[in-house]
Length: 252
Length: 333
Image (cartoon, rainbow over all chains, first blue to last red; front, side, top):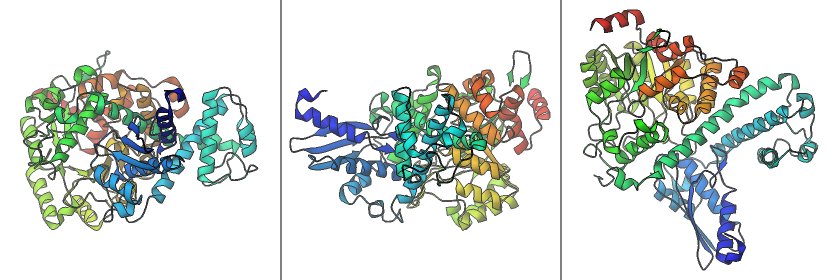
């Protein structure tokens, strides 16, 4: 797909690029990268329809809601977009989520009996975990590539931004961490220390190894879940349609 | 029984098996169909190709199949039946204590039959728990905290009725509380898989053992924190175990993590049969070695002694089984 294909495809591409900024909060991976987005359709009047699916019928409804709503908001940022419809399929709460995202964007209003607030706290819990994972991966990478704990923990945000990275993959690790710093808000100034705990506490070079150990299981958990989700999504949509596969025509 | 090349015997207790009926005739609604669909996806996603069953066999398998898969060629010496009722999804329940009792009747020396409770059943459920002890002498229960029950989509262990049931377990000498978290607990603005209520229960009931099924996945990290603080919290390895086939490196990371935080005495092997089969899990686990870099970083190792604990000795300790006496008994019968 290139811009030469005309406006439609260029717009679809913009939609895909915008969706790539939306992450599954549990996994800290983009919804597009996970294969959750099934189809994107841009109609003649610049209305956008996005269809997505998840690894299981039972995936937590709150995360499904959060992703659907984030997708809608991300697409509304595109200046040419007139309408956005995000549609979740094959999920026990699909109908409610689709309606809620279209109407209010509020979890509490969508599930009045099942949610007593919106999702800020949940987002914060997983934002913290995502930050820890990004930090651990970057610290390990830098330590393996010749940095010392003393030198690393002496870096300011501005030094880290300017740090030369060996390749695109390493530069990506760095960028993800810098984005995480902004989101979590622990190192707001260019002169702030670049590596602090998720609560903004300073780190000690002498105990950096132990600190990394405690972060390790956050990363392993997220990586495991991402792998599980990929495997399940693949199994779920690999073969024939589900109705054919297992007697779905048995409602009481 | 698994035998190493050197001829050493490894006694195997499969900590989590089911004898379910998810056939279309038993499905009450679309959720029943989707529930077994989801299990079948887990099964197909992680099993070696030659062990993948067609959907209809997976919905309902025979007693002969199960006995053979576990104890015939499956290496298991014993197995713990963990019921899951799901009566809102299946007319006669998915995998009730009564249904599992059929395999117990067939293999009385090999099956440990666990019961279940649901605090939403109130007083009547407490009496039912007494009946289960009288009739089946259960020593453990399986709790599925995300089970749908009418308008309720689950419960937490710190709720007052759950506390009463745990007190009752203590009174009835039901020592082993197997807990499984599912995704639909309310309120929806909280993390559905949050394992904090297990922490709470483990502190309040130090005489009970809490075996967290699937090692708290998808919250392995939170589970590890809890288990470090609570000596009566154990990890059941179903699900995590199956990664040994498609993604051995991840399996190595998980098991080393668990060995680092919980240690080798608090992990229990489990297949979650019929989602996975003990035969290939045991073969692969016995042949498995931790990659050197992981051993080095975590300071853990998966020696034969450690494997023996995970595969049987730890569960034997929780259920009061003398392995040597049990071996002799199984040989006689």
